[in-house]
Amino acid sequence: MFHQFQILALHLILCLGVCVASDSGVEFDGTRAFEILKRQCDFGPRVAGSPASRLCMEFIEKELRQYGLTITRQYFTASSRLQGGVVTGVNIIGLYQGERPTSELLALSAHWDTRPIAERDPNPALRRRPIIGANDGASGVAVLCEIARVLKERRYPGRILFLFFDLEDAGLPGTMEEWCLGSQYFASHSLQDYHITAGINFDMVGDRELNVKPDRLSMEHARKMTGDFFQLAQRRAPYHYSTIPQDFVLMDDHAPFLKRGIPWVDIIDFDYPYWHTHEDTPDKCSPISLQIIGNVAVEYICGRLKKN
Ligand SMILES: [Zn+2]
Image 1: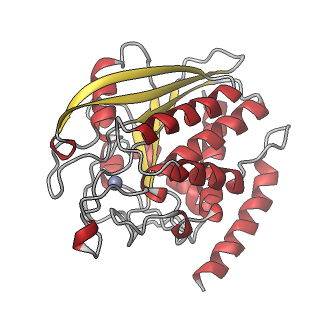
Image 2: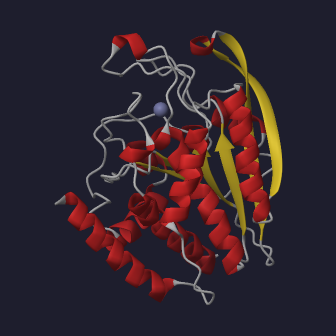
Image 3: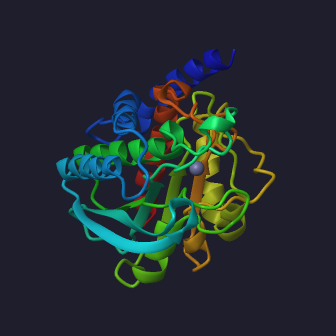
């Protein structure tokens, strides 16, 4: 039943997409985004500092270069007891510059690392092994890369900062400590270099049973932007964006920016039974879900430019 709704919703979205497309008619392609999700998973777990992580970084950078982004690597060190102490992480920063200089600098963010343990796996013997992170890691990256392609092909005139944060998922289980280390580092060291107006974070957006609820921190600290985004999302994909907020506060990569007064909406479907288990694999995700997320995001980004 759920899947019938999903397919119906996709058709509706695709039809609406034609109406809201730019002159070029280039649309977000969920199938292509899903390929990018799978390519990351093929590297294996992308734990910060691992060989797989380095290969994945090169893959992401190659993707972004195709779309004319200027790429910077931001290396940083942080403490992760889960990874045995001081660890080096890399934030991948991609700047898209359109032809028209705008005062607005919208940031799109996602974490590209995956969890070094699987503390929620039903099999205790496997809990100390790193996960593949198809949804928790690869899905947000896939959406960002595909948005970069769409903006380039539409010749989007504004500026967008693409932020791929490392070490989001190396925190201690059951605590608020040592999570979101890449975004915390960027927020405390780089905001003077990039005058970011607002941001959108994408995390766990590939679940084949997609149901995104408004995040509490976003609602509290970025009320207007969160309201605007979810109003649009609910019009376009009412079966996949809920009006009911999450009933808990979650720590994610938007938090360090909200703390500094920059509105940053977290788009996350936290209702995912495979979270932090070895079952978080591509078959639990869907190109249709990525399509729904991507269509709404692109429409929001383009609509925002018109207002600025
Ligand atoms: Zn996680």
